[in-house]
Image 1 (cartoon, each protein chain N blue to C red):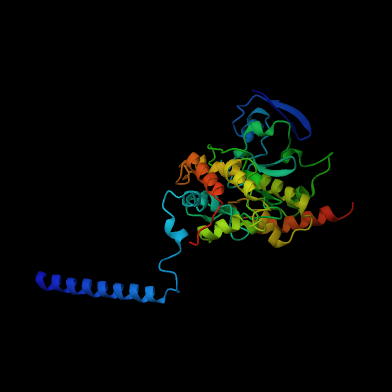
Image 2 (cartoon, chains in turn cyan, green):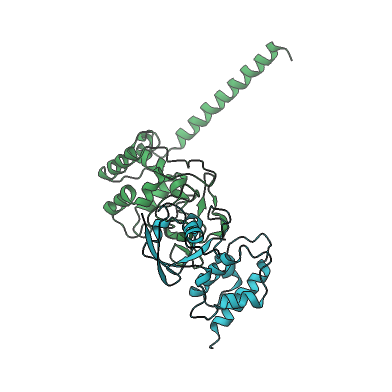
Amino acid sequence: MPTTFILNGRPVTVQADPNSPLLWAIRDELNLKGTKFGCGKAACGACTLHVDGKAVRSCSYAVKFAEGKSITTIEGLSQEGKIHPVQQAWMEEIVPQCGYCQPGFMMATAAMLAEIPDPTDEDIDRNIVNVCRCATYYRMRKAIHRAAEISNTPS
Amino acid sequence: MTSQTSMRHRFLLTTFFLILSLGLGLAFAESLPEGISSPPQQAARLTSDDPFTTMMQVLTHKRCVNCHPNGDRPRQGEDSHYHNFNVQRGPDDHGVAGLQCSTCHQAENNDYAGVPGAPEWSLAPLEMYWEGLSRVEIARSMMDPARNGGRNLEETVKHLTEHKLVLWAWEPGVDAAGRPREVPPVPLEEYIQAVKAWAAAGAVIPES
């Protein structure tokens, strides 16, 4: 049964089994490889994307739940050719090491900043709980504060 | 020590404890207030198949109490450990901005990932905490409008017997290792009958 949803602003229809993870429909059927497979158990956060603006771990999110919803992946984070503050901050702080988990972190951070524009360290600890095997947490924390600064600075 | 001596010692010890327990029993009986010759009747009447007992066997089970925590962190698992990943209650009992309950928990179990799910997945509000309470304290909390979301008895019974998140306890799916989660010790239909029977009989909460 086909499932239709908005992906990065455009309507798409996938033929994937409605019970299969959205992650695989996006990576294999829609060929967007930015969203990563990590643990497959909603534990590491590498597969994080947005569903109607909220962070969701797509490895444990069945395709059928996406019907009619708006999905944003790391490829759709920048809007109208303008890089997202999180992406800008990640580059400025040279956050990634191997980089594999970073899209998930960036999507989780973007979801947090949408509701907590100026997060404290405690906010970051509570909201951003993804896993990075390279342990880039220290640089990510700096980048998150920097992203908030960029977001809150009038352009 | 010979076996004969050992037997003698055991006999003397047994006799000593027997006399001690009789003495303590008499002492407590003598100290009971006038007019009370035994423990409260309601407590004494309760048996393992009493509707209240049956109901509370479910409501004190981890499938219920894990999401009625005494604090801002949910519990999870058969050992009721704090929810992994520093999961927090958040402002509306649905998690924090970047880590909502729905970040992982959807409207149904995901047995491929071992992530449980049911409609309206959330924590019970803090005033409805059950963790650390006795069954009587849970029942009192459950019947207190200030701590039960303003529900009357009918609404409480409806929540206990019809809310899909409550009924999820009997279909909790499997964990991340594929092991089935433990269900409450009372079958669903028996539990529903017990809740209704308890409510119909006046929703009496025993002393203990």
